[in-house]
Amino acid sequence: VQLQASGGGLVQPGGSLRLSCTASGVTLNYYAIGWFRQAPGKEREGVACISSGDDGSTYYVDSVKGRFTGSRDNTKNTVYLQMNSLKPEDTAVYYCARAHYPGSTCPADYGYWGQGTLVTVSS
Image (cartoon, rainbow, N blue to C red; front, side, top):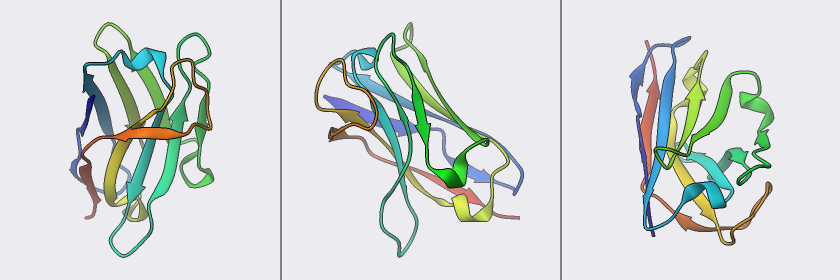
């Protein structure tokens, strides 16, 4: 199983980015997917979680509620994190992770992590 987060970049405060989490060898819709971030000098932080399949419920850390939205496109086997109204404090490397077990819901126990993508929010 290989996960890959992509879509990061440099954006001005107030701007938007959409991150993608793709995978080979696994159907992402069967698993809860989490988004995490780690800023320089800080611990990794859970940002969002999207439950599997028909549940599809989403959970967000308070600091991103109302600004970030998680979603899935099962035809593309991709999970997204839409990030709006970005702030400098959102600057971090963002990772996606897959829960251990199919049918998982949030909060989940994650067993597979992808390589991250850097998001820099700066003017």
